[in-house]
Each structure stands twice: as C-alpha cells, then as structure tokens.
Figure (tube, rainbow, N blue to C red):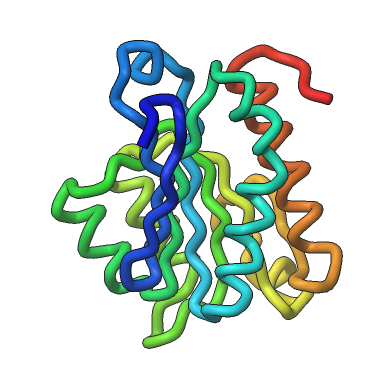
Length: 169
C-alpha cells in the first residue's frame, strides 16, 4: 500500500478509513464521521454515500476521512466509555431507534457526558420523532427516504466548510 492511499477496513459492522502513515498524511486535516444505524443495509448505504460524496475532497490530499460505522449501539457505547473512541470534533449520523431499547436520546446523553463537541444529524423513518423529541439537542433532522443519503452528504459538506473555513464545490 502506498502511503498516500487509503484503505477501508470492514470489521463486524464498523468501517474505518485508515490513512497511510507518511508525515504528509499525519498533517492532513481530519474529518471524523460516525454513523450509528442498526439497519445494516441502510448503514452501508449511508456510509458509502458519505465516502463517495467527499472523495473529490480527499483526493486533493489536504484532508483525511475517519469514518466509523456501527449497527450495534451497545458496541458504540462500550467503545466510548472505554475511551477507545474519540468523539471530539465529529459529525454523527444517528438513527433514532437503535434497537435493544436504545435510542438517540441515550446516545446524545452519553456524548454530552464525554464532552463530545459534535454536529448531530438525527435520522428516523417517522416524522413524528422530530415533534416528540424537542428536548434533545441535535443540529438537523432527516426523514429516511430516498433523498436522505444525499441530504446527509450536503450536511457533511456544510460541516467541513464550517469547521475548516473553506468553500467546497
């Protein structure tokens, strides 16, 4: 593997884009993205859409993407609590209903406890989730329909523009 290439590794529902280890790579601006979606098909769809939407940005060599994707919210919770994951300055695409009695409110509470300064895009098939949950903090709400992956990619580009003070095409 060349040092400037990226490798995508899929391990038990966790995708991570791992950059090479050259000095130039270490100085790249990092884009941290988490996808928490219990439906494996939709998780893969969203993760692939995110990766493809910013490939042109990554090819410029100035940025690196660290994309972590989880279908098991319990695994994500364990990794945050054990300090295995750093969620500071990250973007989250978070399904509201995550299975096993866990929902987005649980995850958002955990993120606050661990001082994660993150942009949150809350996803749900039900529009009523937005109205019922005005007490939890999230930045955007997206109904999971055919346009949701494209909308999520637009929010990611906006996040990158705001975080790094750049204008993307």
